[in-house]
Length: 306
Ligand code: MBD
Ligand code: FE
Image 1 (tube, rainbow, N blue to C red):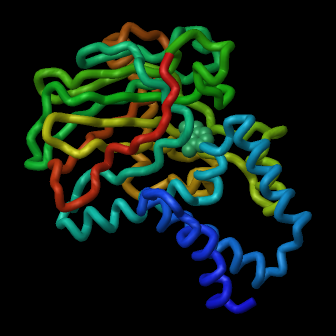
Image 2: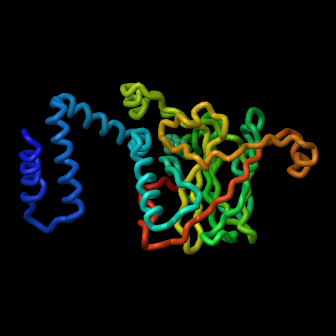
C-alpha cells in the first residue's frame, strides 16, 4: 500500500469510526502513531509473527515494570530533555545548571532535614569511599536561595537503589535537604557504583539484540526546587568512571561532571571527625525563574512512594 492509502485507512479506523465525543488530543496522537506503525510494517515488511513478538515483548516488559527503564535505554527520555532544552533556549533561558533525565528509580517521601543530611546507614563503611558533597542553590538572579529543596538519591556499592532493592533499609541513600540560610546544602554519603540493567530483564534482552550494554556510570540524582523557580531534574556523574561517556541512558552531559577531590589532610579529616580519607564534591545549582514562555518542567508520572 502507499502511505496515502494507509493514512486514509487509519483515519477511517481511528477518527471516522467515532460515534461519541472524543478527546481530540488522544485522537490526534493515536492517529499519528498507528499510521506511522502501519507505514513501518509496510516499508519494512514486518511479518505478523514479528508484530506479535513485539507486543509480547512490551507486555513482558510492562509486567516486570521495566518500561521506565526501556525508555531511557532507547534514548526516549533523553529526547524529552533535548526538547526541553530547546524550549528554554527559545524562551531566553540560559546559564542554568544542565538538566538530565530522572530515570525510573526516584521514591517520594524521603526524610527531610535542613542544611545537612547523612544518606548512608554506615553498613557499607568498610569497602565504601566516604563522600561529602556540598554547594549553594542560586536563583535566576544569581542570589543564594535559602529554603530551596534538594532531593537527592543514588545507588549503593552494588549499583542498587533502596525501595527497589528490598535488602536496603527504607530511604537508604535518599534524602531531602532544605538549603540553609545561606542557600547551602551538604550531605555525607558513600561514592556510589554504576548501575547495570537486570541481566535477566526485558530491557537487557533487547539491548543484547541491539549489540549494546546496559551500564550507567556512577551518578547521583537531584530534584532541585525553589519558590517561583522551575524544577531542575539533574544528575552528577562520578568522574573517572569507565562508562562516563558511554551511558546506556545517554544522560552524561558537559557541566555535570564535577571534580571529585580526595581529602586526606589531618586537619580536614579532624574537622569531619574522620580518621580515613574521604572524597569531596563541590557543586552549585542554578535555577531558572518560572515562566509561561516555556512548558513546565514538572513532569507528571507515577512515582513510587514509601
Ligand atoms: C538508573 O539508576 C538510572 O538513573 C536510569 C536513568 C536508568 C536506570 C537506572
Ligand atoms: Fe540512577
